[in-house]
Image 1 (cartoon, rainbow, N blue to C red):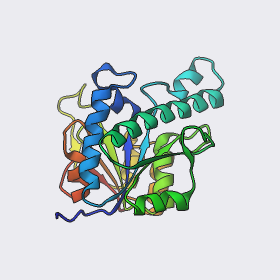
Image 2 (tube, one colour):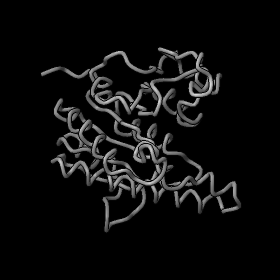
Image 3 (cartoon, rainbow, N blue to C red):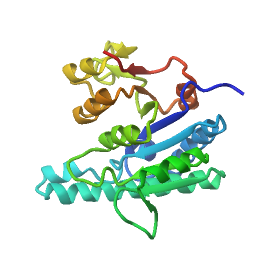
Length: 239
């Protein structure tokens, strides 16, 4: 068996990743494709937890800019992440991958409430854990959730699955000559204002020395390549 470089990993999926070409809602074929990639990874006996965004359904900050109370808008965004998490759980369990969804506030009818020790135990038993509903607090993004949960469960790396193949100094869709970074430090990300994570999440990763790998989710097999330590995307860490 091939030996993975990382044994305990947080995978961050944007809500938009589940929408596919439509850009909104949930595309079952895309979710199934992601689930198959995750199953390939689990066969390496990696301990995997996932944080899913909700931007394909609702963005709290968008609602607040149009006059909605920010806290209410953010709670709606948290509920959107639960919908996405349940869709991913369903796809994983259909291909026989044991999965648990844990929410940051109580939703007993559909998921477990997040308990750190229980999450770690699930991972040790080979189950995929999906962390839903963000941190449970408004004003915090799912990027921050990824950093926080990674610190709590002592993950070795956060894999940032994006729609682009790494971090660039400009939008590569608007500027064809944009430069891709192979490696970056946390400070460089903060100082340059690069859209890897929000600044709160990056600072939390820096304080806890949790590296990040930004890579293209649309390239099938990239999640496995990332866990095996192959050179893809952009690596963020160090000084």
